[in-house]
Length: 59
Image (cartoon, rainbow, N blue to C red; front, side):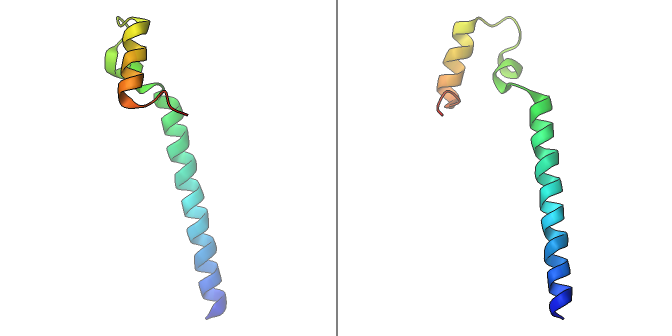
């Protein structure tokens, strides 16, 4: 029974790591949400203002 629980925990860890990796890669592919929201015609000042409004400028 103990071995079964350990196997299931290791499987769950592998699934969590795979899901985290896929999510990370998909967010890297999407890029900057500010560019998606404003488009290419927006000025740099408008992009900076939206980043401040959304709180994306905070580290």
